[in-house]
Length: 123
Image (cartoon, rainbow, N blue to C red):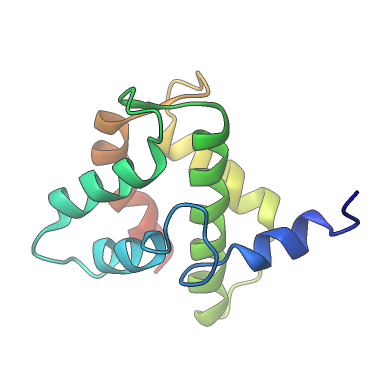
């Protein structure tokens, strides 16, 4: 039985280390955030990292992993800019902006339509 806290588990799965999504999510988010020339392709790649069952919809743990990683990325970005937000606030914000209809699912279309706005809001 593991006594490791959720926060310690999240730290272990940070971008570029033992990220269960393959370690590329942070790089893709940074590139999308920086107005890369291939933003649409990068969003497709990001979606594919999380859509493990290839259903075209992020649900369950796919959805949660995306929200967790997005929250971590935004917190780091906002902290660098001198803002002080907590995990729950940022997670709720991302959830509201990306999963606009609140159905607990993220489609590729929702991600394309809303991700850049979320990332730009953190600047």
